[in-house]
Every structure is written in structure tokens, then in C-alpha cells.
Length: 313
Image (cartoon, rainbow, N blue to C red; front, side):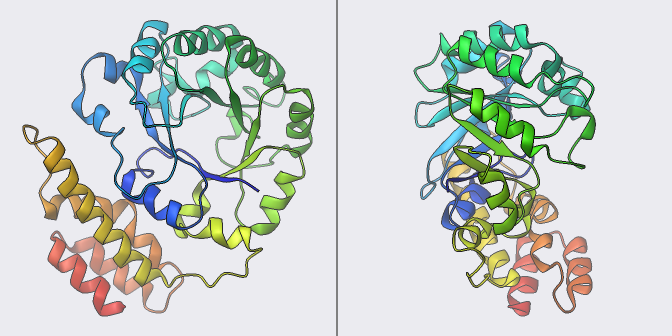
């Protein structure tokens, strides 16, 4: 069973992707990269496409609502990525208000045009990530599949929920199975895969791969655990936290070397921001976790963060 890390805005940066690769992910995705941001020369947007040594296969995901923007982005995305993906499923307001993400679910014709523009401007395989439809009363899945196939996409990822469900509620595996039976391109399934049991249930639909998102935030080694049907010893959270912290330091040094003329956050600021994003999660459910997390929430320097983590280890 092929297991892939979902693109998660604010989370799937290079250090976390590398951790998930080490944890058994067969493929990882970047955070969402704004096609408009690339078209306007945004340096922070371009940095989202940086990778670090030790990463496995990485796919780049972009979002946008203009054919000219996604065409430009397709030309700019480095060829070290294994795939270029269009997001047509993110329900976050700052994405949908631009006419991108889940706003595209209801407009298969526009999805076709965007994908076509990408296919014509990159040698990379182009794929689509989307949802079943705007809401349970309106299923667009088959029209979206048809749009992807006609545009020349080499694969499609379905979050097996509707836009109206956001990230909760029923996952429609029966409908996903029907999509797979009709598809002429590989289908990846996404939605509430947390463990070996839920991964096996999704695999029964016939999907070519299973995508995992939120479960990886608590345990980047969930991929190995699923492949071994749960018989893998989970790495203790504090040790995982220490490893992630060291990767963050390595990544920051890499960015400083690659962008010598641009401002890179100080070590203290960089690790503090990332600590609030990632590191506190690794202590969930452990003895004294609330106290440790409270301490981590107050510190503002790398040295303090490092001392707290290693004292727990």
C-alpha cells in the first residue's frame, strides 16, 4: 500500500516532510504554493518550494484561479519535484475568496482550463486534488474526474468529503470506490486515515495510494506503523521533538546559505515560531505534558526550547 503525506498549509515544510519520509511516507507534498505569489515575485512563496537533503520524492502543490498565474507557476516549479498538483479542494476562506481551492469544486470547466494551462507549461506530471462536490446535494466528482482526464492530468486525489463538511463528518468510501472504477488515471484517497484499520478500509476502494494528513502531525512515523499493521514501536514524543528541532536548525542554516541577500528569521525567532506550529504536539498524552507545553509556550529562544525538550528526554 502506497502511503503519502497530504499537503498541509503551515505544516508540511521541508523538515517535517523529511521526518515523514524517514517515518515511512512514500511521497510527500509541499505546503500550498500560491501561483499568484510566484507570478508577483514573492520570495516567501518561492521559499515554500525549497527542499533539503534527505527528503524522499516530493510533489509541489499550487493553488490559483487564473490560467496565466498557474501557467507561470508551472514554468517556475523546479524539476526536482516528482509531480505538480493543483489544489481544488481547500475550503479555507483566504484561498476560496480568490476563486481558488474548494471554490473550483463547483466549476469543472475552469478546473479543466487551469490543468490544461499547467500541462502545457511543465514537463512534470500534473495532478489534481479535489473533493466530491460542494455539498451532499451536489456531487461533481465525475465531472471533475472527466476534466482532469481530458486536460492530460496523470492522477487525481479525492478528499472523500464535500466542501461543506470541511474536515469532519462522514467519509464517502462507496462513492470513492465508484470513482476508482470509472477512472482511467490513478486515484489517491484522502480523508480521516488515522491508523492501519482506516487505511485498509480506504485501500479496499481500489485507490492507487492512501493520503494521510492530520494523523502525521502527532506521529510522523504513522506511515511505518500502518505498513506494519500497527506493530511498530512508536518513537517517544520528546525524542521525536528533539529530532524535529535539529532538522529545523539544519533547514534554517540551509535557507540562510541559499538566500544570502534575503532576511531569514533569527534562530530564536525561527524555532519559536515552529515550536508553536509543531513541537508542542509531540507531548500530547504524556505525563506532565500540560506543564511542559505551558513552559514551551512562554519561551522565546532556541536555547530554552532545547533545554526544556532535552530535560524531558
